Length: 464
Ligand SMILES: Nc1ncnc2c1ncn2[C@@H]1O[C@H](COP(=O)(O)OP(=O)(O)OP(=O)(O)O)[C@@H](O)[C@H]1O
Ligand SMILES: [Mg+2]
Image (cartoon, rainbow, N blue to C red; front, top):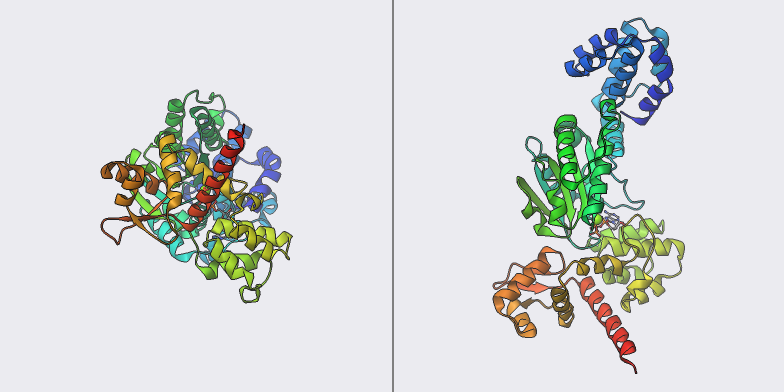
């Protein structure tokens, strides 16, 4: 239900509760297909007229615009003219034209669903990625009639979370496939205890407004939380979509293996192998094309892409089109509009630590975002990955070369490389046989600067 309508109901709640007779109104609402017979019975199960009115309003507040309109019409038909007048000025538009005419296909009712589900808003500066967006939505449509998983994967800062949120900003998709709503949960790197807290908070959110559950204690273990979530998703929110953002561990993912509909963002492509059910994948390219990246810079500095200073193209090229890096630079330029050459130089000198800007992104700076991926590798694999800094820009190498570099059997090397590829730390060129591997330029830059730093630290600590 859109915000205006909901707040009108909340404002008028006391007056409505005092006067209405729920049983009369519900007859109309059941025949409008707004209330189910079960819901009606639950309301009628309350002992007093006033409690029935309270229960009906609670049910109503969890529903959409149609419910508000049906309730309004019921008031009119049952001669509660004064009360209907209270609601009249906030009646939502419901015609398909009304719904469609809202910006970007997001009607107020869908906006309300997304807001309630905790789906993040667009970043202040946003550029469209239509091909990728269509791909994600197309996969989500597959979940219309069956539970399953859509995995959106790619390297740090490639725009997975932004894309997942964007994909559900679509009236038709929500109404057709996920009428039960959308529930966003940021998972991140977490221990068992943190995971429990996250699932508890999701359950708490889903249970809100369900007065019968007020006495339930929070689940005490991940297993118990999983069962509670299973119950809520199947009984209370059937045909809804759970968005699990930024999942790292298969152990965490398995806690959501409850045969519901899930959209998952992760840097680790193989994560969904650990769960059951239908699975779809969408890779997110690590970089935007030059025009899109320039568009981001232009939006940040409130200019036109054609009018940007000459350093703009070089900055975009140094950022390798990464939406994250371009946005970090754009946000800095908005504050310091005469620093184009300075930031270009910082990028060229790989001074990633200087490129930081607090934003809604999970990491403060680029090096932290990259480093997070390395920290989840086994220590031996981390050392091997570090050796990849010898790779040359724009040169792809076969596993055999790395087998010589690392002094390991070819098969073992292939397994390790596969792990790096799955974790979006390395790319594989499948057009060549045997496969050739390469680092994204940003990863190579990051690796080199990381190596320099470790060498400096080592030299410093080795000093007598
Ligand atoms: N379409 C876009 N338009 C403008 N900026 C974008 C877009 N997509 C991403 N960004 C910028 O890049 C940043 C990182 O995007 P996002 O959080 O989606 O990356 P991610 O792939 O989820 O990264 P991680 O693996 O660290 O979770 C955003 O905070 C935003 O500033
Ligand atoms: Mg993310």
